[in-house]
Length: 233
Image (cartoon, rainbow, N blue to C red; front, side):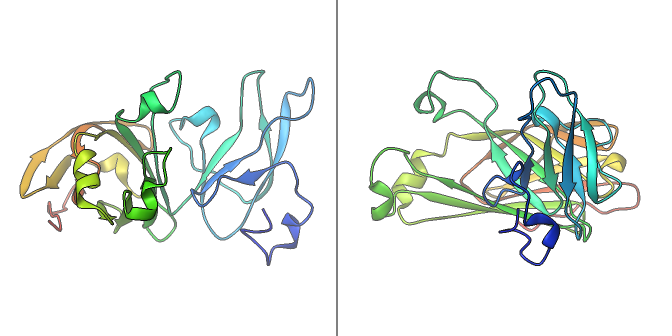
């Protein structure tokens, strides 16, 4: 915690919660036997969303910073997502990560207090030193103005990037901003545009099967009442 918030003295003594890399994911594992409640410190300066067990509820936004008490059951892992974060994950369980290599990604977009978010996804083969020869792809995600999400990739080897062209994004989960007012979702990629199905659950928007190729430049435009559809591609 203190690596992320070195100016916040309240984090100095915290040893039972941590951020997962630069993803914006805050985890507070349950380490006490027989407990049904844990204390979690929520830092100031940005909104946080309750992401318990890797799922948002209907109204995930936390209303306060500081120490909160979180009820837990036997199988619960308290997880929170810092506003302004975008991260990718794979939802299909396999016996090994090698078997997951060609599985689709899901994206999580958590708008911050300034109606923006960003994140990165790094992909290589996970086994060799091929990345030293450019065999990797790094995708940069950006969300802005509360309704436009983009993905731009960079690689040192176009042939390696082409080998990943069949990997799709199967779901985009969006929290924050005014997503509950969404009326249309327009996808743009490789000179084409199309509409995507979506559903709204409370304050959470889910874009369903957007058909995006993860390694090619793309955009997702979310429009609500009185907004014009637009994209950058």
